Length: 210
Image 1 (cartoon, rainbow, N blue to C red):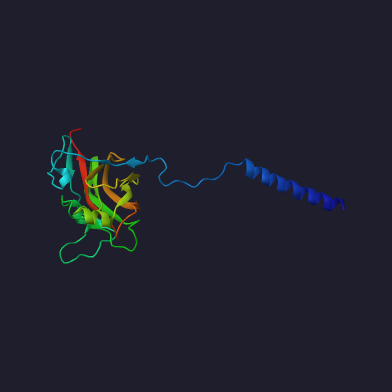
Image 2 (cartoon, rainbow, N blue to C red):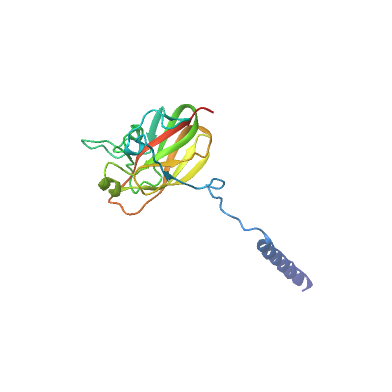
């Protein structure tokens, strides 16, 4: 009888110890994949050189030169029609009337395009033209990107909120230099007619004159 009481007492003490330990221990938290990276909101870019209309030279402002990547690849692209295509190199042609449209099922979340440079590039800024900007009908009808993730060659990830607006939007890079950038669609804006997320242009500017 005494042995049974001691055993019951030992079990009770163990249960109480377990409960108290769990209550006093810090609560486990799920790691945020963007922890340590400040969220960025893109700003509309204005220029007297005609950049907002899709025309551009090799340079824009003092201390920055437009640099073209060696390659531009994408997770998918919408099938070409008889009169136009939607390949990722359209993002580099200086024309906001052309676009890369992802071609996967759904709204494009998770779709990506990657720019690879021949060597590490010191970054000044990145400009993005959201949606398919050929005309107002296509801009409103195609899916526009709301949140875009930029991943640099050192593994740094930057989450950017794009505006639901035509024109070029400026992003301040999260790193000083990179050999490649992967742009991934994280979320999109509502109100669309066709389930094809689009970007019309991505311009990367190299920092010079340091």
